[in-house]
Amino acid sequence: MEVLLQTVMGIEIGHVIMWAIGGILIYLAIKKEMEPSLLLPMGFGAILVNLPFSGAQAVIDHIFEIGINSHELMPLVLFIGIGAMIDFEPLLSNPKLMLFGAAAQFGIFFTMFLATLFGFDVHDAASVAIIGAADGPTSIFVAQTLNSTYTAAIMVAAYSYMALVPIVQPPIIKLCTTKKERLIKMKNTKKKVSKTTRILFPIFVTIIVGLVAPDAVALIGFLMFGNLIRECGVLNSLSQTAQNVLANLITIFLGITIASRMTAAEFLRVETIIIMLLGLVAFVFDTFGGVMLAKFMNLFLKEGNKINPMIGAAGISAFPMASRVVNKMGLEEDKTNFLLMQAVGVNVSGQVASVIAGGLILAFVK
Amino acid sequence: MEFESMANVLEEVSSEAVSEAVTESSGFIGTFFTDFANDFVAFFSNMGEIDADAVMEVLRIMGLGMVGIFGVTGIIILLVSLLNNITSREKKQKEDK
Image 1 (cartoon, one colour):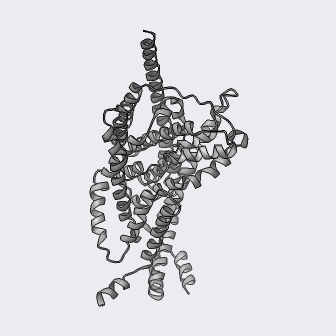
Image 2 (image 1 turned 135 degrees about the vertical axis):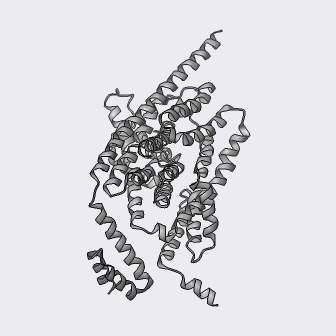
Image 3 (image 1 turned 90 degrees about the vertical axis):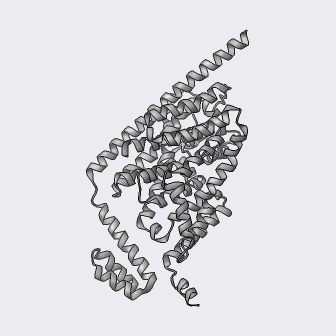
């Protein structure tokens, strides 16, 4: 009885707040279907590690140490699965779309500047800014490599905002574009891409990024390795395993392992709120960067060749949510305006560009 | 009572005596909020001390980063266009034969 009372008396307000946060994450995962594969394990894990004298903490800490802290193993292995899932054809058939992926990384660098004004040191500012990569594994990799003290908040912000893309992006896109611009119809210029190009693309990208930003070679290498398995055509069963079993398995452990950093003492800090706000800023300015580049390019393009600036917003790497958002917005304006093809091309280029941005940040800051 | 205590904490950042008094008087909920308020004030008082060198360094990184990302992207675009050209030409030649 005394032991039971001791545990109950050990409950602190911080624990209760973390249970509520865990509950909200589970609610968003189940009821709103927002990134359920990650938010649900994270939510449950948040409750698990915030029970007084929690015996689960040691086990989850151990998984964190092996899977994330030592060599960022889980985010990297997850990238093999993500690479195997991505079809780069829309991008390869219209490579210019990659420019929007690059422009949509503006939020990362702008947020880094803003975070410095908030008093974060350069390493932490860079780690916080990488939330704007809209890519969980990249955020974890960069934050861990830079030894950020805010890894937990960064991970939670990165995954939460990815889930919130359908809520965050539309108002920003509307704010940056006119109705006339949103009604622009784009020509569908789908060209057949040869198998040789599909196979050489992941190899060449790995070499180029590896030479420019060697610190990011693990990230881009694992992503492109997954894609090579998909495209080579002789490893279909491995490709299927990477896309499904491997990705799912890692996701289960990744979610609950991230939660190990969600203890009240570590998570309920003023900095967490600031990081959440800065993460939002990063997403907003990523969207802004992509849309603005399209508007700028339209100044030089003839009528009939103009770009619907909304596709620039898909350059944020959150795949495939960002492209779905853009397509949906296009159809809301005009039921015959299908932007999915172009938006997916921009979206996958954002995936590559966010890894490049992460690598460049590591190269400049480390 | 709690609000007054919070205000005291906010006004006197370094006054540990006040924090302790608040902690003793208001139980574990008060402790949590007092700690949080202390952190809040400490964080924003540090904010005033912006390191001008760090800001300049980050501005440099921001410029270099955007140039770098467009540079790498440009190289990849050129490479993909080249690959597309070569492979489509090869295909055409095969078809002609």
